[in-house]
Image (cartoon, rainbow, N blue to C red; front, side):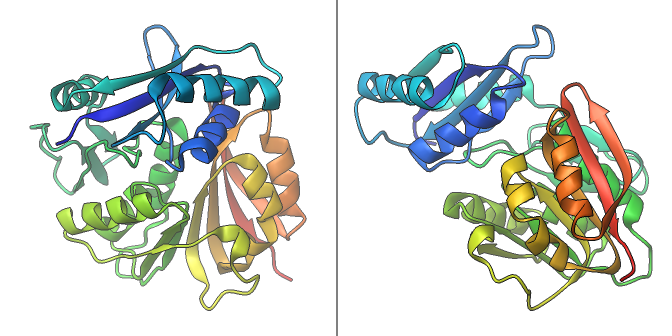
Length: 293
């Protein structure tokens, strides 16, 4: 593994989304978010194989962008080079196996944890394309996928904003067929395909920008998961809703609790009904169904 450049910004629950979006726009790389459970400190980071400019000038450019576009106190920004050993060991300290009831065990490759009887195993290592199920919004989606699954029944699933592919891979392990997924980030799509191959599941991962997709899709799905930032959820509510079959379930995540009412309002305007919701710390997620028209 090559040495990687790490660009990190300290964040709060209120600034996490905005800083992640800023890093994405600056670097073209999907950020990862780590919350230290002991201190509560939140760090938004990206990892790059090379920089387009010097570390000092990139750090200054990010600080200038924060000051000009966000009405927040300037957070700490660091740009540093990590050796392959430091990169790998830092993930090993922070990421542990995650059990989703009796249905799923999601674990990194270095874990020796064995599944319970009946649990499907997803092996997923943190990498440049982040997503290991540790975040509250992802774990909500995983729990819903497990609870929706009806044995001996054909159920299709669409994962919008697939990231590392954790939701789509877990769905395939649970028996959903077909499973389709897309993300606008080409590096995420490549990582998702690699993760699917290593878990021996067949999934169609595509690079697509939801905002540029047609309103009416070629296919509708029994389950649609959209773990996206709230402004995209709101602006694309109609398009997302069109991808759900009548009687299906829509799972929305990646939403701060202070933003959830606006997201709910946008989807209720599309004849969607909130079935259940879950709040964990500052995050709120929701399960919706489609009202009969």
